Image 1 (cartoon, rainbow, N blue to C red):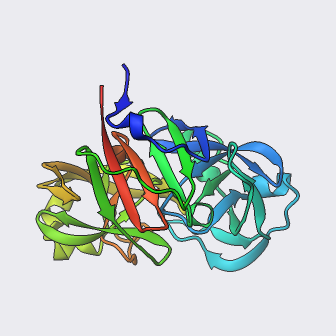
Image 2 (cartoon, helix red, strand yellow):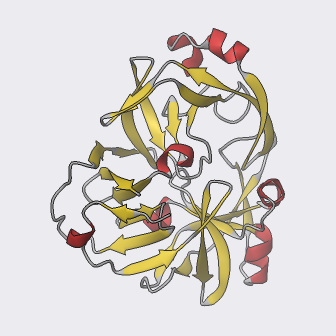
Length: 288
């Protein structure tokens, strides 16, 4: 099957274009750390700062000091965050950048995904950039922050965002009720509902009727539920009914700055351009 972008003839020239592996609905790119590699790193707009697996940090000869803090994220366990000195990161032909990074044990995630994960590229690498994720073509493009868009097409959906609490937050509607949503390429499902939102959105009965599922996050495994809600809408999109994961209480999602998450299960049909400079996301429909 051949995919093409509707306005391919007007594309800007990227600074770099890097192929990615789409494994179990998650994005992995070959990454060089301090000139060594490549290492398999997951691209995750729901993580800040970036992270290295403890074993990989040791392989690189980096000194990791426990901070006493626990990693935030899914799971019912507890994972200690380790402090690392900033590292030099290079992806494809993109100019090497020194970024803030932490270290933690990613072995549980690796086992769950049946794939070794050396680390996660989060906002400490992505922010202040213009990043395009072309899901159909399985490539990531980086553009100059000073480059000017050549105009929107009728297939484009513009999504303004707020970069708050080190998260990309957008406005969305769940069953016609306004919610704050996290834009998260680290979620392999389409949508997720936070536990604190169940009561406000009147979704407790939908949660109880949903099927149990097992999930994995920074803090290990957790039991959640997967079901349907009446509708999800944002930026001109309307999905009805919508399949969602309901995160359970005590699974690492109880205290968040958002009530809802938009993930790769939905985004993988589009070319997604995240412009950190102008705080906007462009989702471009593709055709076959």
